[in-house]
Length: 471
Image 1 (cartoon, rainbow, N blue to C red):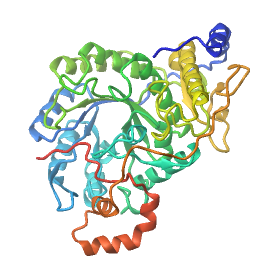
Image 2: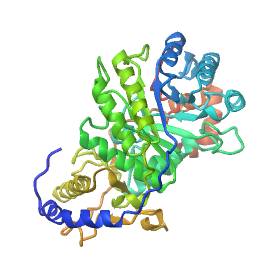
Image 3: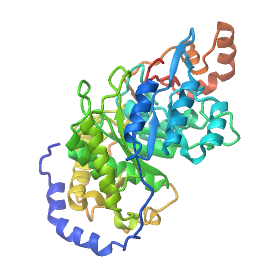
Image 4: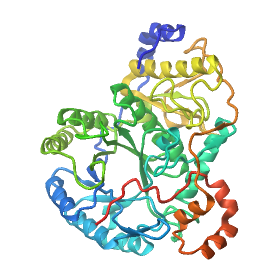
């Protein structure tokens, strides 16, 4: 990422020695302890023998596993899934027998079934940690992705409306009585929910996720800068919502060999570990979701990192160790480059030159503060009725604090915007969500939930099908 040296950047660079001195003077002593830490692989292909072989290979140097393929064995006439829960149970039991904790990927409210979840809670206990429910909701919204991916929102009146829509809609998918994966349980928070994403982490947590994996890979930007800024955004959000966070190392390329080389993989795991990630996961599948792609060299890098982590227990980082940079309220910017989108609905030039300058200045501030405090920077948003300082941060920088960032302009007002994604028809939407079997059912559900559907997105489909595979 390249920027011109504007007056704001020049001032920040001039004051950086003084600022750094203040930061490290104010830092509190960290509590010395070894935090919980999970290292594993996300297997997104559907072969039971290949999966079991991989588990055999990695179980001695990992403690976490993602059953990342939805174990689909067919579809209904209307596109809904038919799932092989016997296969899911076999892999779950195999993971459990090897001592691994695990989660299960799903993009369908009917999978895993209530009965399977009840059995898993009894059979696997704490080793079954929860459900990886949907994939990349924030990133797909920033990109206004087309089917089989769907953005969470497709239009909004302004930034605040976009934020409110995103949170309420995604929450209805995750925890709501109609769409939530735990809708049949007494408590909507019965199981922990996970996802992997490359943007809008704050709003993912606000919508109800317990853990978000920020991605290192082609979607999130493959430069060192993008890794650190995404960790700062994800860790800051997790801290504010008192939740967990991690890193998903995914494709560096959209074609073979897909993943980065073993040396880079090892370095990325060390970087995530030293930034305090509770989870570090390596993604494993080809483009067709049919077989694994991790080489023996890459698996050896994971093993070497496991040995590094065991030999180097880390200090538990506290908010008092870090600096918080507070973004403008509801500025859902992607941060992959200075021209990224806001909630996928506005470009950086939403108000012409003024907005371009504003987005560039915010981006420069992020880059500059990363240069000044490095891995000790968290990037957050204002929290309603709560001071940022109450989270424990001793150093808080507000985006419009002119004592630190002189000449920072006000954020230009955004007007109504519509994304590029075109929603499916209501009938298609209902068929996808409810897996209905005839037109009569379609009509009955249409009457009963039309109001809910209008709130719950044009882009909603609980059959996103990120990982289509057959067994």
